[in-house]
Image (cartoon, rainbow, N blue to C red; front, side):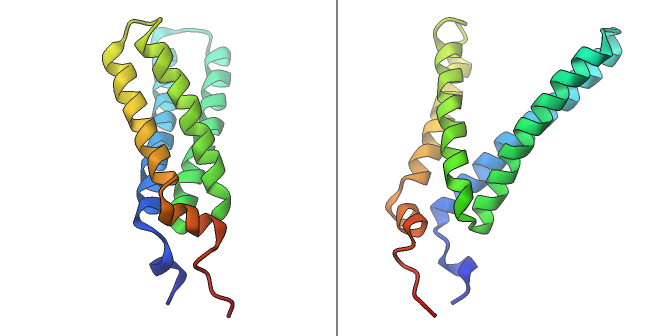
Length: 133
């Protein structure tokens, strides 16, 4: 059996959802630069901010793709990203007064966390089902 057939569906779903977060973040970085060019703001500051987001969300995208490909290292960064996203959701729901956005982001993060902690994914992460060849 090939390694791709041994990967749990939940792992691939969590990888796709994490990669989607990375793509959205990279899109935000691009929109940030485009808006700065249109608004004639100080481009140096905005480029630095956009570069920061590009690196950050590039890592999130890499972790999502690595989960889809079955790389063990990607599970922990994906969990950390979801925990940070829960903090963002709490802030959006409470202090910012954006209950709809906060709830949607929170549910999204919880779904990914649940997928990453299902029994098949935990067994895969621990290497329980792997056989020595």
